[in-house]
Image (tube, rainbow, N blue to C red):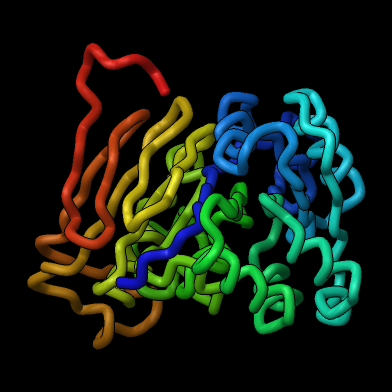
Length: 286
């Protein structure tokens, strides 16, 4: 497993109480506590922060909300990079902003838009290179922005179809953290079935279900949980029975010996050797 110098911060999402119920049409907000961690990891309030609202169907409004949120924390150098096509990922302005950024923040919405409009582009290559080689460089993302960090990306699927083949739709993400599959809004939207099927398809990868107002700080091949919720870890590397490959779509699946962990604030997980460090009960909230 490659050791990268940068930091990833995937966040489970926490949208507002807008009129629309669909995630694509609501505004994503993150608790100040988690944004504080993003700013701190990027070097503090003088960091160059670039917000990319590509996943959203209302990118202007989402960009303005992040400008307000980061400004409230005292940040002064904030740009919104409104990428709406593959061509937008190749402009001189986009390339310059990503090269100069200390932190890149992807909004929520539809993760396939990130994969289609940024995946394989010049700025995608710069993101991969800087994450690998630049100490302190931060890539953060909430909801869709978190899911897009994976190589094998959850693109959609019904949570109501509990653990039947075909309930999850997979797509190629940005490949920043190929060892993980990330799902978000995990507890509130009951997405146990779809992350289980994703792990059944890719049993060598670790599935992570992030609750809302919950994030991970991933660096040095391990992650630490931040925020008020929990993270469910699905480790399928010692599965004994997995009938996914032989079933027809719509058929209930069976898996045995899939290891599951429930982690919360301050707990740590080593992605390389799967070791867990639980925060002592008397320790302060992170």
